[in-house]
Image (cartoon, rainbow, N blue to C red; front, side, top):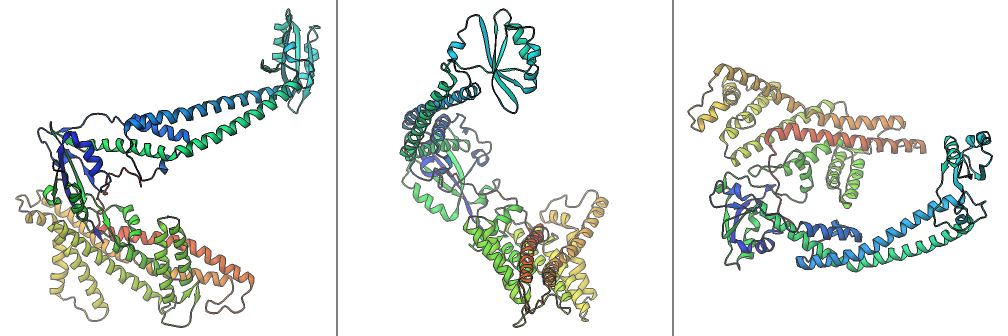
Length: 639
């Protein structure tokens, strides 16, 4: 449960050595780069790098070549990147040329197939013509048009052509939508005949010059040609696959080399230089600082300096979480709210413990808990981040299920068990949930005090609503109330004055008291009336929030009762006693199975959401700001 400690590093070296030093020591060495002009503010003689990245076109060329070869860029794994930029350029042109030659031929063949398909579609409708098409189109004084027209138009054709005895239409075939054929007319009237057929919605089919024989001969020739084209396409496909397989390793090496140089050059965005030297700054985990120093020791012309974060207070160190493997899956939920700041406690361990415990209490079924754990293990094996969380929560639910004596809703009758739905236990369950909530809220306050200590913020430590003053007030009221109910009232005047009134006044006067501690002359508010009125309502709202936040935990007990109630409904529908499975039939078993599945999914989702709500609103809001920036080292050699 920790935010890993960081050190600020400065790397200084000869300007001509920049690229080599960056590629050798900076990238892939777990360094979070910091903008040099944030480290050295308004430093004269320090200039930014302004030149454009010369490796952009090279990276695009190699990437395009890989795409042409069908090699997925995302599959490029960690490995050798030593190929020089010149060699990468030549190699990309060579392989790209080979691939483009294959692709160009394939494109031409596919275009030929498409053209042949259009001709085949045309001649299939005029198979009744037994004259070479070339001869038909060679007539000098007669115009011939192939095409189709709607069936209704064909019925009107005789009437429309009655005025032109020299024009004829020859029908070759028809389908449900149209009649296919050709019409011919002398040159002297062909324009008027064209107009008539156009008015009858005649659609002309232009026969390609490639169709020179009879339609039957053309069809046979084109089908044979298509077979040859498909054979050639298959050969090209195999050739492309062989080329990609042969060049895959070298293509990946070329891409890594281009990508590495491109990204390493981009480090200039963070660096600065003088006339003779370059300057790079960044954050490195304390645990790795010695290794980095040892790695750079053989560089006499390169200087490596370490600074503690307190020496650069104007900079905000990045956050790198360091948790036990059992708690690590819950980091994803914590990051939904925000990343801990560098000077803030990591709440992951507390979140993991309270989340899994409350989930188990609210679910409380051994059988369904084991099923949830198995589903979690299944999802974890497939890399789903929910998997390990669900597995832990399922185990917690199974544990509390045994404590409550519930296995798939069936009530056990032996062992040390607590029955939430027993009449004498229902109110006790709800009160226990509220008591647990008070403890959890108190722990959240302690975390807030610890964060104040880490951040050296006296106001947060002593006067905050979740600091020492708020903690004393909250628990004084709880202890006093419990003593009053128990008949041993300790709420004497001195007790109220010291443990209730005084802490509340400290919270009320948080702003002026914190200014006074900081020795500010303007510690008193200028508009006192407005300050007191505004703060009064804030404190009143604060007291209400103590009450509502604590009572909100009653849902832990309510969902424990809810689970028992839902399973009672399932057993009632199956007409089976929850403590006895005598007289089971196939129908009853089916109802029990379906009911358990429904409860498993529905309640699992509801409980997960409700526990997350308790964590975020009742706990995180008290001690966790979540304003950290993630530790993002410059990783170039992909993993």
